Length: 316
Image (cartoon, rainbow, N blue to C red; front, side, top):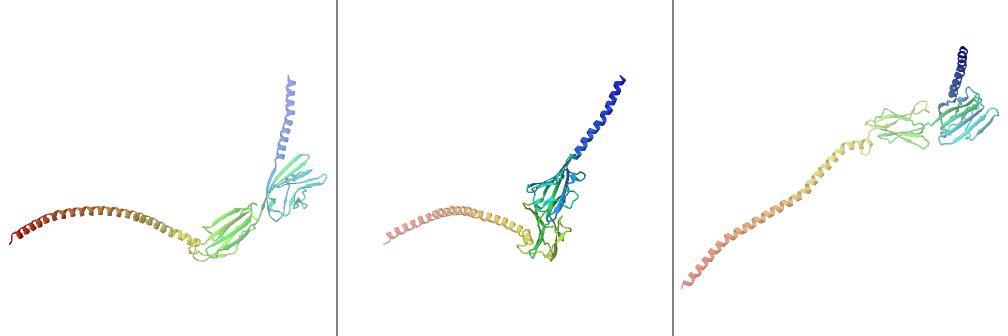
């Protein structure tokens, strides 16, 4: 009985290190299989070397770069160390970095806007495969211009930048209008319009910030002042604030007067008909009265004439 218990304890002691070692290897393998991810920024027209971090502490037997750019162009660049053979179907400005101690590093020279994309380094050796993801963001400096209409407004334009530029004004502008236009190649044009709010001439400056600029770029200085012309931005705004209420009042008053003038002829017609009917009735009454007054007079004259005729007949 005691021997059987001793054998069980020895078996448990022998199993524990093996089990621990097994789980340790699984954990180590899971760490090795976890891809490394990096984000890189490169300026268009310059060069950049992308390090294959998967080979930093391991000597690979085979290194393969799998490249997918923003235009969904896919290419492969591979190198086998034991035979020193290479394969590539990428364009000529993508290749191995000859100046690097690590023969697996990738060199892009020069960087182009179309190189924006994902670069995967896949290495293999006797211990397994190792992968690193590199997201390359190509930055393009914008072209800055400042124009003025010679009076009340100025337009600052940062064209074809990636990412979008940031435009500010000095002195600060509270009523500026800023718009963005995204182009098919993912570059952005930013347009900011400055409108003067003072009658005096003001010196203004457009300030453009961008990741490719070592410091913000200050454009040339222009003069602007508010103009009260009808079709100027300020004049039109003033006209709207001043004349719009007046025009609305005029329309309302005109509508009321038009309604009254439309109704008045109808009322006059009714009044005329009523007055005419009253006059007709009055005239008929007067005629009847005159007839009544004339009939007694006619009878009287008839009697007088009869008497006169009788007297004339009797006289010799």
